[in-house]
Length: 383
Image 1: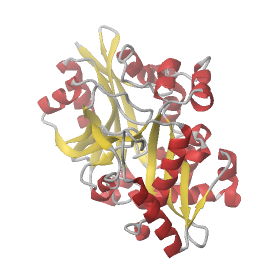
Image 2 (image 1 turned 60 degrees about the vertical axis):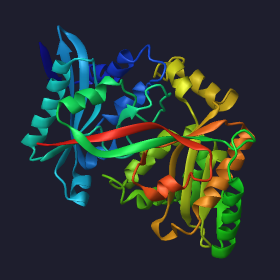
Image 3 (image 1 turned 30 degrees about the vertical axis):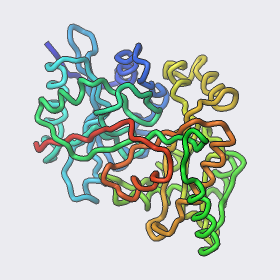
């Protein structure tokens, strides 16, 4: 018999955060998240998303052993913006057992109904900055630190429960241009030069993460993330990051970034209008660290960042202000990233999740050797 228990207290929270590592311990494609980051994510004092979200976490038990987990979330800001009454399920993991899945999903559905919700959607986190989308293709591809990995039986159970497609995302493997992987990279360079001259644009560079955090009296990093806010504002379910969230993500990710891989285009007033945030993959390092920074996980990360970087480049966020889109402004971003990636010895890049029907996003890879190697889905069902 399966029983569901709401997570209460730090001990149960740690059990919730570590269940997926135990479930995927011997899987070569799953990438564990940091225990410390997970604990902060579900800390109501530290995670700014709780300012506009409500959430509860649940664990499934059988014979005293944890066999599944799920988070039930309502993002009130997103529901208001998109005029929906959705309850989200996220951080869902389970053994291949129908009784376990049914109990977890029923818990979220009932939780949502009690709060007046009309539809259940997921997997989604508090915001788009959290991992989202259930893997439906690409189970034999290495995951990333910012995406979800799951076994092939997950979507089978979702279909059995009557869930249907809400939206799909794709991820691409983009080869760094070489004689073996030809690409029309000169097009990016030509368009970049033309757009920079025509609109009097320039690139902004930083030496380290402290410099960008302190730039313009500490306000510049807000401007950078506001480019992302505006660029992503019309994408599925997006809710804008507030100032506290921006600083939360900046402090979380900037220390891991090589500033050479941060591309920022500014207008003639020195305001950022386009941003490309990329970093060397930490997937193998996280696997070796077993998802823990201490006592020795930090060494694997430092080695991956400074001593023996991964051949894979993770393209975390790329955004252009709406009023600057279709003006070739993304070309300077790609021109810089291609040059730096080539010089640093990266072999290929992994794109972040992109909506399959986002035509602007999908066509920007047309001049590169790029193939879709993963697909993931947000499921939905009326309550």
